[in-house]
Image (cartoon, rainbow, N blue to C red; front, side, top):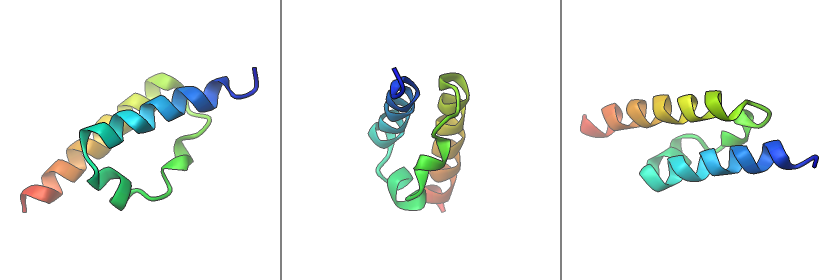
Length: 58
C-alpha cells in the first residue's frame, strides 16, 4: 500500500477545498503537505482556513 498516505492527504486537501475555494487559490502548491501525517495535515488545513478567513474579512 504505497499510496495510503497520499489518500489520507487527499482527504485533508478535499476538506480544505470544501470549506473554502480560496484555499485552492492562495495555496496552489498544497501538495507540500504530502507525507505529513493525517493529524498534522488537518491542523495545517485549519490554520490555512483561519488565515484565509482573516484575509477575506479585510
